[in-house]
Image (cartoon, rainbow, N blue to C red; front, side, top):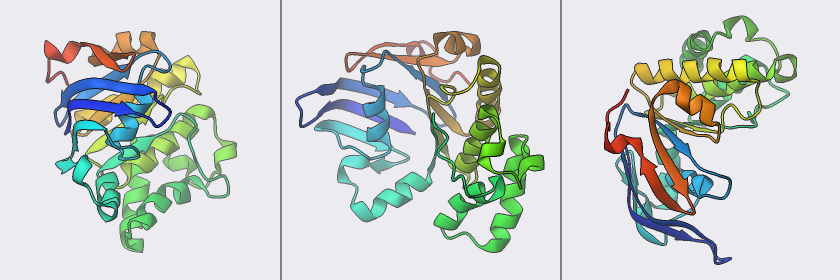
Length: 227
């Protein structure tokens, strides 16, 4: 699903964000990426999403070799992934239903497909009763569940969650993690970047730690297929 082979990333400012990173994440895994602020976690995600390109080495995601990817192919890569953000990034003027439907409209789904899929996905995250509400009428945890529904609606093979519990209270954090665990059980690969160590410890999954641009530990070396 994701492979980094000898990846180095240095920005124009001279900051060496990643140094000789070698990682393989198989389809169906649930993986935490941890590390302090500035360790290289954000760059790691940007390379996967093809927002940045490695200076050396190769990044392969969903069978796309990202160093050779043409600009017109980038949208096809991104359709294979659903992204959950710390700050939700919902459209305040749209209802819950329309926020989720918007992700389908962007990729050209038909009205019929949208009418069938959106209520199903809202049901998965427990928000079918909030479909006509607006983001500002929801709690932080509910807004994050809308973000999760939006990430899921196009049936991606990979979910990337960037600090998904950073703006919600601890109880809601566990709810979001349980939802991501259930999504993983259904076969979707889940990659979570977080600094919340207590949450990581509670869920007993593969943990990759990045420090100063290098992978310093990977529990998956002992248990590569922990699901």
